[in-house]
Length: 386
Image 1 (spheres, rainbow, N blue to C red):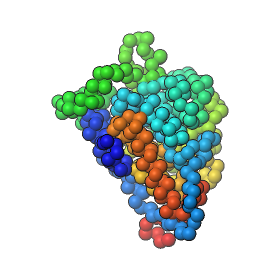
Image 2 (cartoon, rainbow, N blue to C red):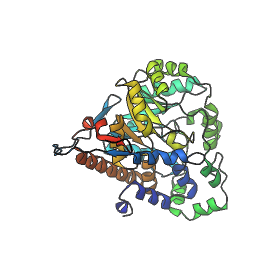
Image 3 (cartoon, helix red, strand yellow):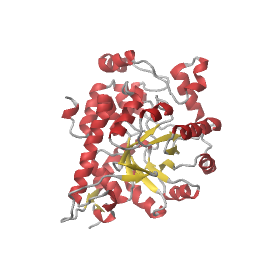
Image 4 (cartoon, helix red, strand yellow):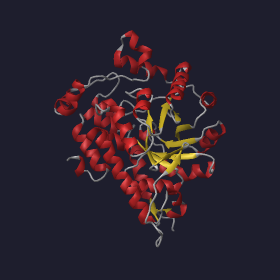
């Protein structure tokens, strides 16, 4: 019943806030430093207006598109997010099954609490694995081999994690590694019995894709997190991307590109697609919103690469605006995590249903019967005229 009263993603966010202890909610909801970039990700869409064309046949609006060599039923998919078990006992499986129900692509994070093999066995729809180039290159190579064996459709390399951003909300709530919960946070756990009870009933928490590396040492979940943190490599360069390209013969996507010059370099080293992303405002505060970079990057790469806009999507019209600005599709992270926290798989499906209806309605009123029909002539930046 609570989900039925959620008429947009903002409503779902409020429901997630009610269901989660404060440290868990703010871990989803927060960004780096002053959260300027976090806010700009969503606010940037208000700088653009849609220009509808009338008297178009929109009796049959088709939302399907092709991305990374596979067909999906929406110009929207689910971005990789880490440690989903923190927010609901359904973990990544709930999200992947929701993606399957809507015929779209699911992306699994290296830091997921479900293994890439379990996801592959659970869903028949397209899937992508998000990877890092780690200090232990053999572990990175192992991930590639496992993705090949499990039939993943694409590999996504995150390139904006030389170090973690300064996430001050997490410092305040004690959601650090290791956790340092104060009395306020502990009280929040006590006053959210649904989450706490399910954490007791379903206590298994591990970084499932790397568990085999340290579980034999008996170090548990914190040992896994410490191990992964020790593997982030600040010396990674474009040469390493070329190395990864040689290991993987499927679509290679770079996530975290914000510069037109980097977009050109990505194409030169063999990347097939880019996720224009600032990590949900969680890394460099002061970085631009992906929506503002779509047109400059599209102008640089032309039709040679597919572009995904990642960050700030709260309405279906945001997706349509992004496509008009040059995106092939969009991805969501925070939005579906709100749904997961609010209601597990049903919550993620509710978010996808809301966004699908909004995309369909926006395209209908815009006069576009297909995703390919949405173009630059359908959008204008405020203050620049029509």
